[in-house]
Length: 331
Image 1 (cartoon, rainbow, N blue to C red):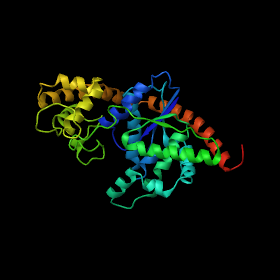
Image 2 (cartoon, helix red, strand yellow; image 1 turned 30 degrees about the horizontal axis):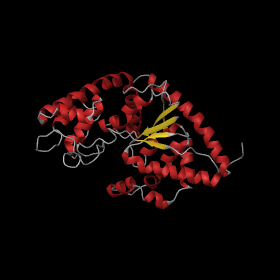
Image 3 (tube, helix red, strand yellow; image 1 turned 90 degrees about the horizontal axis):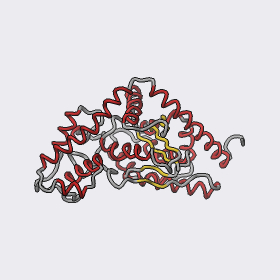
Image 4 (tube, rainbow, N blue to C red; image 1 turned 180 degrees about the vertical axis):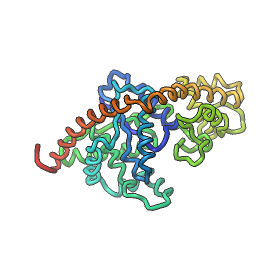
């Protein structure tokens, strides 16, 4: 079974990204039924909005360092940069030509981003789900670790794969989503009905894996909760406490039910203190490893190896796709 996933290099990874995606990658890499695992830095997706080139390259390097610091093993997971594999952009165009405007306009993320966009909305903001589909279909991925907010895009990927297969003959594997039961959606610390996001204008709303440890603890302790004093999971009536329970459950591998029993007689201050310490203890070794890796030659070795492997797989698939459509000379 082959798995592929990517994360945009649009700033530091949040605790939500880590618990919802990267931590699960580390677990998945050791599963015996996974024969191939590819993780890429989605830098082509990042340019749907204006980017400072120096900052973008810094973020790419930082993201790879974080992946490795979190425990991804390059012997088990091939890590590469999307733009270093030209076939991604090439298949993206093919899938655009097999998709429909109406499908893309229905994408919830597009509609949300369009509303927030101050300047002109780029064509890429509309069409990037086609590129995302190409990222997956290019490698015949069987399974895609998917956040709840990306499920709609994976459904589009499946539709495009089936449409292409029906039109040109069996070509693509139709992928299935993998959505973790816990930690799939970590919420904002200041508005716990919204997803934690590194683009939030309020820095207290999210935790970056590269935040100072003392700052991390303060953010947890100041997280918005409620006033009834009961530590219980109730996503509708107690979203703040529910979010902190989810975070602690993911980090300690303890069920929420067991955590509720443990803290049934505790107050919010004690509970938040424990959550803060658990998060800090999880992040400290990641930061130490990150600082060792960020300026090392090892990063380039890992990325070169990942790039070469991804190009081999991608070019082989792209040639098959081009032959099916009738592009270029038959090989």
